[in-house]
Image (cartoon, rainbow, N blue to C red; front, side, top):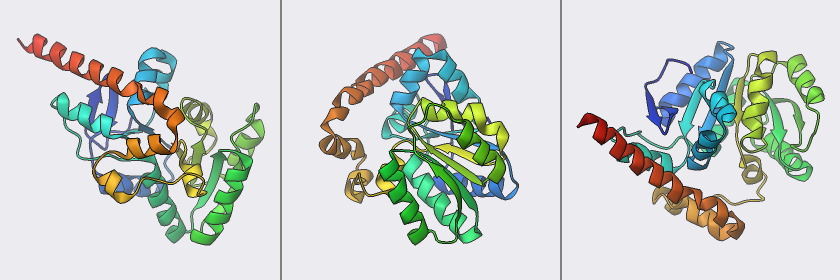
Length: 248
């Protein structure tokens, strides 16, 4: 990890302890300096997966920035007595970086989602961010990534956004980031939201930290995934009591 920010450890994962504004300023600075950076936006589900898969946990430890994406991470920090100032979500970071990239005439490569979805994203990019140089894109359904990586190497984009879901997107980035000094970021399902296929929760739901509930109403099949939350909180309280015991 880069040493620009104070770190807060939650269940053995180091999160940057900063605000959205400071984080964006840092990434913009990194981009202007052509730094090679790897961003992970991690929620409780990712933290639990990393605990169960040490190879993935190692990948997270090699990222430059792991941000607290999800109210569960913020709650976890507060319970452990190591508060984080605010959520730094993947979708907000993506859209803010696209706005900045558009103003700066930066280049972008996109990987992920179904073909129909990424085609919609490409159209939206041309409409909403016309001054971005979209140097290439590829859907997320591929067995061999050589063609994609070769294109990224050839074009040297300022940003590479990968929307293939964890752990695949982080694995792809860690394996290939050496080919281009870009800002590499996993963005999960953000392309579906950009394309208009999935609606993001209205601001009221976001402000009251129940965005997860809105998503559950939209996608009831997410219920099984939501069961990760009580397990995560159990581990947080277990960690809290363990720390207290050590102090005593």
